[in-house]
Image 1 (cartoon, helix red, strand yellow):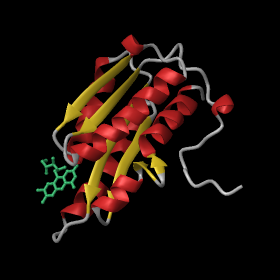
Image 2 (tube, helix red, strand yellow):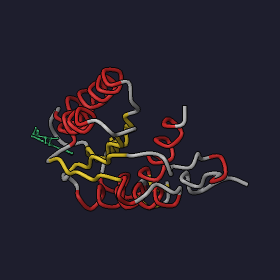
Image 3 (cartoon, protein in one colour):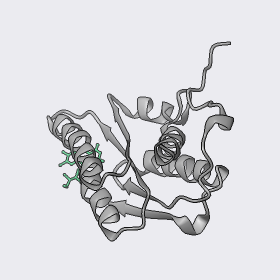
Length: 156
Ligand code: RBF
């Protein structure tokens, strides 16, 4: 059967998070969207047995700051993976391209530098509707998928 919600996943293949400590770095821009992504990621970690006290949530002003946020979390030590959540919506100027490029390159760099998974949970959409569709709408919740990815990477 064709899946209509892309965040439907086989829960049985997701490793238990009972031994992991994770940070979630969330951008405040487009908060309606990023709050929904955060809720999806947080609930998914709890569902897979991550202890509440082992989830650290921090906010950064915009998606551009996700890289620094992830770096600071990993520099403190004791974190197994960082989930980064943000939403960049195409506007009239080229900010979209610069922010998306910086974040995708930046998060990869932080991940390789610290040798820890850094999960790219950044929506990069043409408009608000596409973002809503991916933050609990018809295309699921990408925060859920980011959390599942984090647990799978922690178990590698
Ligand atoms: N941050 C986002 O997370 N999503 C956006 O859609 C977004 N659009 C922006 C558009 C402009 C014109 C500017 C100047 C900033 C935007 N930001 C956005 C904020 C950006 O990620 C960052 O917080 C600021 O540029 C400060 O470094």
